[in-house]
Image (cartoon, rainbow, N blue to C red; front, side, top):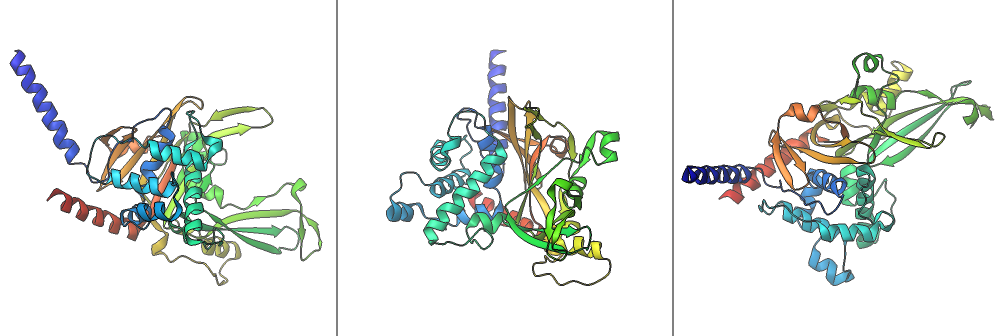
Length: 381
């Protein structure tokens, strides 16, 4: 009986070993260094974003050259490069991103602690750190809208804001660069949400791009009327990024009540997303009917089609929650829970309390998966 038990354990170990070795290249767990699930979840999504992954795998930021030129002990770009190399090395044992953590603390000293942080805030902080270091390397003073750092080349889009006078109809238009889009859950404005207890991503995007009447205490000076007037404001997307990050506002803070709460509302989101209805071209044409307008920054239909590749989910309470990442690689979903990685069905992903959704342009998505499959084939030889 004892011998049979040993054989069973050996068979289980062999089966687990085969399962791990069959995982696609790049799937590797990250050890929790003390309430760092927020960091691990974002790193898994960031480092599987095709433009960012390819940038570091191609050694565009060379660690040795960086050390020689700047002599910095801790460099955020160098540590991200080391992370990418570790994840795509073929080693399946969990990796400890301690050097990266220390480097990030140096850049974001206000967040340097072992307390749980917000994953979205960390995401913005890392992109800002990449931007700052690359700007230093390039000796560039360009603003985010024209920046050629890898963070902005991958994630930067352009929002259009139209503020319209309700009296004469004069519209003032401004453009603002963004690296993500923060969306309110459409719980209040959607009757479907009230009846079924769920929101939809399309509902959230419709809410984001819907014209909103500003309050009487927010009157603005109309250039045409030359007086303070009531106005309406409408947002739209003038230019889409290669990698689209959608942040779902699940943490609500009230300054009046001095309270905070988490919104557990279920969000239904598609794996394939067409952003055409939310482009400035679509929004403005809809507002003005069939009249034809020229747009300086207008995406083609193909670049408005996206495929999902990562979902960051939050479970638990506001004060004691946990972040995990779901990655879609080679037509299979994988759950990255700190050091642990396992296959999951798409139903598990759809049922998760998504906090950040990562989409990549459709053409780039299929090319990236093809390249990754080729690299995995070479590694296995």
